[in-house]
Amino acid sequence: MKKFIIKTLFFTVPFFLLYTFNFLMYKNNDGDLARIGYFYSNPSPKELQINKYSLKRKYVSVSDLNLNTNNNFEVLNIGDSYSEQDSLSYLNFLVHQNVSVLHYNRTSSVDNNIQQLIDLTNGNFFESNKVNYVVLQCGERMFIKRTMDLQFNKVTNIDSLIKLQKIKKFVNEDNKIDFFSDAMFKIPLTNLEYLFKDKPIYSDTYKVESNKNDLFTNNPNSILFFRDDIDYLYLNNVKENIDKANFEINKINSILNKKNIKLILMIPPDKYSLYYKFIKNKNGYTKPQFFNYFNQLKKDYIYIDSYSSLSKAIENGKDVYYYDDTHWSPLGAKIVANELKLLIK
Image: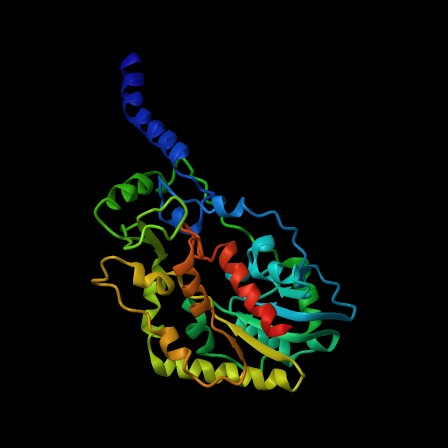
């Protein structure tokens, strides 16, 4: 019996030690790039930026709105994860500048927010919810993909939104480590691979050396970005795709104009695009061309060139985007909120 216990401990103790080490070193509440990259060490966690702010959330979400009554707002925002930053979103910074905002949040929307705007415009939503502007926010990575197969005859009415309010909840990802999971082995292996690879096999996060070490708090000498930023370049670097996408947005703008609503388009740059020039060794890394093409196109709608304004901000300071996350920081959100305020007021 004693020999059996000793043999059992010989196999089980290493597992417990590895699990304990992962539990202590891996922070599952860091930014998304640190989490999916399985980082043990994070020199500039997003909490350092978040903790600088204490702002009450004042914008209204569609999921919390009484849709059986008439409502009036200056702005309806419909976006993706760049809009879902709660009290530190550009929406909230905008509200704190005395602009009323209704946010079409992801608890009541589908994956393609551009299609959802078309559906709303074809339905009766704007009959009882009066707005002067619609801010359509779509991240660079998904913009072309979301405009490729739009259907302009689809409809979403208020009745269906009321049903969604009752049954659909947005569920946050659970990033905890289970003892009997492959993550227990992937985490140490991935951290080891980062010593000689930009992207380990089990990671979705690229970690590249930077030619400028004051981009983020604590001056890390690296930049992180999401794998999909590169994977979607095959769509986003094609001028014909960009021309077609702009045509579709002009078409949406025309529909909204008939309802006396002005369309504002905002495309947050992928972190890869915004920080590309700061990658020290660009060999093997394709230059992103989306904004070079898109910014030159004729637009019937109002366009916020967030790429240019955020690029200027990076030259003058740090933490425009989070180090360990794909999204802009509160500073970046505040910059685009100020631009929105100027356009609206």
